[in-house]
Image (cartoon, rainbow, N blue to C red; front, side, top):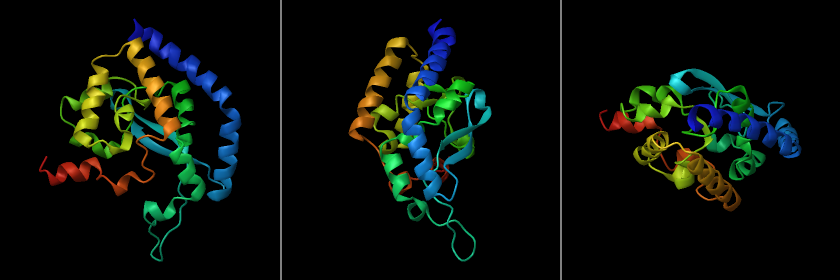
Length: 206
């Protein structure tokens, strides 16, 4: 009952309440990023959700759109703005995803929605991460966030899906709040310490 009825209800109530509570921070961050990113405070990207259905995730835009002389986007590390770096480090970039939760595309707790290009590279067991709504935070995020190797990170996702309970979700929320306050496990530029999943598994011959 919790998984199918109470969890979605709690998601909506808590996301709506959270958005109202955080609205002053939301507005300040939006204005700062509007200025830093030439009028583009939000970042939209297609991600696979429950049952691999595609949806558009919304986050605060932490990188500008500067390009080189050939018209190609500069590396992420060169496009990350000072405001964007602060927003990432404090996890403020996740706040707009409360709108995704209210819409029903996401949950507060669940496997993080990754890129569609990763779909062919999951094992059958890892595909179970897509049997539930993706989350703003999850078991992998409170166990290292961006610093966890892909195999371990995806194993955490499956472990969560196999044991969804109210107490587990409360524990993950409390650990997530602690991690944010301590900036624990945060890597402003994840590409600096780990490969994309598709590149890693192509290299392993998968």
